[in-house]
Length: 64
Ligand SMILES: [Zn+2]
Image 1 (cartoon, rainbow, N blue to C red):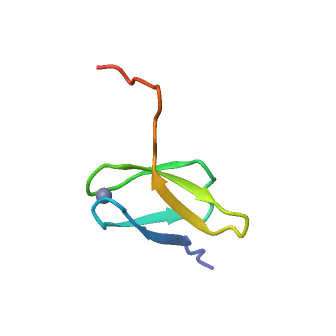
Image 2: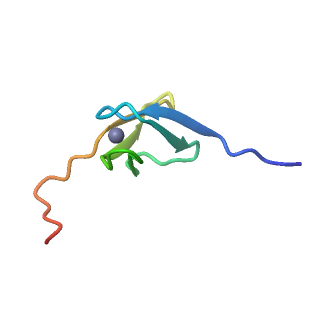
């Protein structure tokens, strides 16, 4: 029996590219848009629905 990977599809808010999100994604996980490279934070609401929002990295400098 082949287990199919279940993914949710969502769209990049920046460039509208299609992004696949694994079903077992955890809230707070960051995925990157394959097209524009935007970092998106995955959040799960109380119903388990997946939402994405641009990841905001505040006060954090990743260096040169
Ligand atoms: Zn994008």
